[in-house]
Length: 203
Image 1 (cartoon, one colour):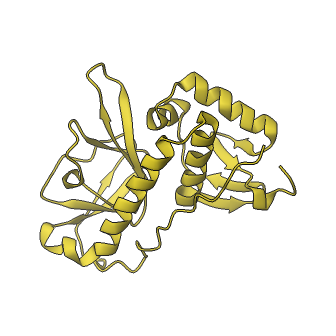
Image 2 (image 1 turned 90 degrees about the vertical axis):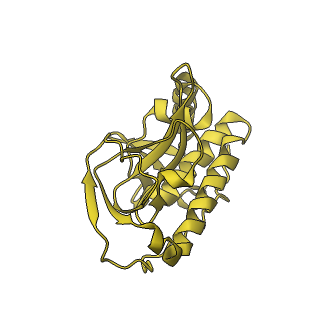
């Protein structure tokens, strides 16, 4: 089965040369810690990964986005209630006050682009394509090249994937196993390696 890799996020607008510079106050958060719900600042991620999420009345989690270095995040970005920013790793952030927000328009544009792209993935059909393109999206954002392919350097559980893609954990597990059998996905400890078409002679 051929899986498209035409999904190529354009995050170049959030370059390493941030207009904000390196003179902002910083904070450290540990894995699974929640970033405080402040509307008077934005947080610029210097290191680590977070997810933004909400939940329904029955307690079902809905992941709204994944964010990493160079991304701006904050409660002011959303009108969704409830809304939470959870650290997936240890995270270092810079605190950006409102009078400086206009200085990093590129990062603000990048936030919009990524949110819309993830939203488009959530509506892809069939489910196998939805999951595959989500993995490609993660590999572009959090991946690094290794000998076997593209390693997604983030521990995302089957349950968390199901929360993003509006499906069940059982379905995610089944399709990931299918990808393994087809040779387009490898496991490395608790990480996933994608073998994209350019890394294969034939799928």
